[in-house]
Picture 1 (spheres, rainbow over the protein chains, first blue to last red):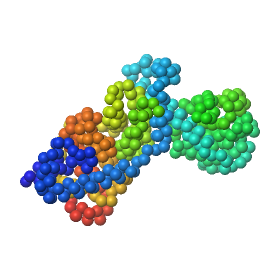
Picture 2 (cartoon, helix red, strand yellow):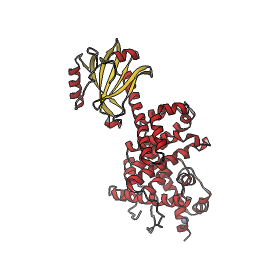
Picture 3 (cartoon, rainbow over the protein chains, first blue to last red):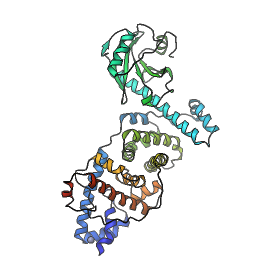
Picture 4 (cartoon, rainbow over the protein chains, first blue to last red):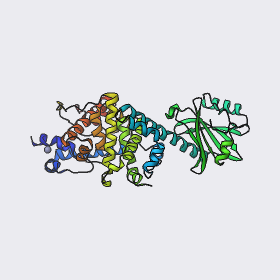
Amino acid sequence: MECSRYREPLDLVPSFDCCDPVFTPALDHANICPPCRERLASRLKSEYSIKLTMEASAPVPESLNLFVKNMPSEKMSPGRWMVRYGVIAASILLMATSTISSYRYWQSYKMEAAVEQLRLFSVKNHEIRNTPEFLSDDEKQVAQWLSGRLNKVVQLPKNLKPGSVVGASPSALGEHPVGAVHLVIDGNRSTLYTFDPSPFGVNGAVKKEPSYEMGHTVAAWEEHGVGYSLVSDAPVESMRASFVSGAMR
Amino acid sequence: MDKFEELTVPHLGTLYRQAYYLAGNRDDAEDMVQDTYVKARRSFHTLKDSAKCKPWLNSILYRIFIDEYRRKKHYVELTDVPAQEPEDDDSRWPEGVTAEGIKTALESLDPKYRLPLVAHYLSGQSYQEIADTMEIPLGTVMSRIHRAKRTVKKEFARHSRPSLGVIHGGRHGM
Ligand SMILES: [Zn+2]
C-alpha cells in the first residue's frame, strides 16, 4: 500500500528545522492520509520533547566557560607565540611527523591551560572567602587541622616565613577539594591553596613566578609532589620576601 | 573579546551538550570541548566564512570524537548493511523518558550511529549540514539516524518499567 512507501521518509521528517524538499511527497501523502498524519504528528511531538529534555540536562560547566574565555589570545603575534611556547614549538618542528610529539604538544598545551585554570579558580576563591574557619598561627597545627578536615595529609611549603600563617579553611578549586591556608603578607590578606596536582592533570607543570594579574599577585609552584597556588593582595616583591629562601621553591 | 571568542563562544552550549551525549559523562565531554576550542583556535585562520562557524566547530568536535573512538574503542567506518528489521510500529518515543535514560540508551549505540543522532537532536543542523560536517552522503546520514532511533527506542523498551508497555498500547517490535 501507499502508506508503507512513505513510512521511512515520514519517520525522518525532522520535528525542528523542517523541511527539505526530499520530504515533500511524503508530507503530501500525510496530508491526505489520516493514519499517517496522526502517526507523524505524535512522533514530532514526542521527539520535540526528547530534544528539550536533552538540551535542558547538560548545562555548560563553569570551568569550561572559564577555559574558553581565558584561552591565549589570537592577538599575540607569532613572535610572542614562539616565545611563550618556544620549547614546545621547537620540538614540534623537529618531530613534525611524529604523532607522539604532537600528542605531547597537545598534552603540554592542555597542562598549561589547566594550570591557568587553577590560578583563575584560586583568584576567584581568594576574592570570595575572607574568614578562616580555623584560626592559628602555628603552621603545624594548621597542617594537622587541614589534614583532618580534608581526610588526607596536607603539607605546607617548607620555606614559608614564620608568622605569616593566620588560619585555614577547606576550599575547592573547580570540583576538587583543596586546603586553603590564610596568610598575611606585609599586612595584606593572602590565600595559599595546597592541592594534589594529579586530579587536575598538572603533575610537574605547576610553575608560575609571582606576577601581578587579575588584580592580585599570583604564583603557583610544586614542592615534593604537592601543588601550591598563592594569591595575595601584597605586591610581587612582598610575596617573594615572604619565603625565607627568597624564592618560591 | 577578540574575533575568535565573539564567533565561537555562542556555540559553547551546543558543543558541550553534544559532547555530553556522545561521551556519556561530563568529564570526557569537557575534555572534548576543550580540545575542540584549542584546535579551533589554532586553525581559526582557515575559517574563511564566519557564517559557517557553527558547522566548522561541529566538524572539529565530531573528528575528535571519532579519533578518540578509533584510538580507544575501534570506531570503524563500515559500509552500512541494510537493516533487516521489522517495521517500526510506533514511531513515538516512550513517555516519561529522562535525560539519564536517553544517555544510557545512546551508550548502547555504535558510535557511528550515535554521532548523527546526537547531531540531529542537538546541533541545530539539517540532515544535509550534518552530512557535510561528517563528510558522508546525505542518504547515509538519514538511514543511520533512522536506525539509531529504532535501536534507542528498543533499548528504552528493554529497560523501562513494564507499565511503559501500556503507553505503547501493548505493541512490540518498536
Ligand atoms: Zn498513509
